[in-house]
Image 1 (cartoon, rainbow, N blue to C red):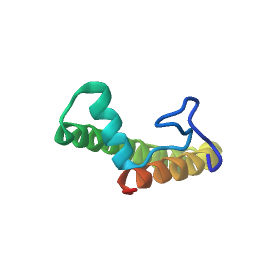
Image 2 (cartoon, rainbow, N blue to C red):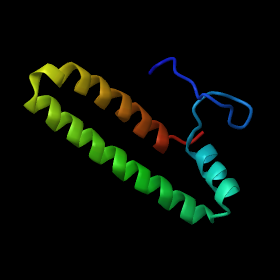
Image 3 (cartoon, rainbow, N blue to C red):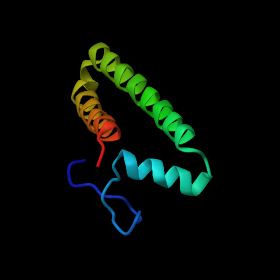
Length: 87
């Protein structure tokens, strides 16, 4: 959602974190290396990409769900783009 924020603060803010902030968060919480943290984010991106494809297909097959499918795809796509954006 365009004006949506996190329910809890992360690094003192409720704004959604950028990729570098997510990597640091993963490393701090899990103790993983930077490489492992990046691999986790890659797995998330893969899952989101699969969800986008499924939502598109569902919207094509079910006209009554098309508007919702399009909104879901747009939201997931924005999130995926944020994941690859460096601060």
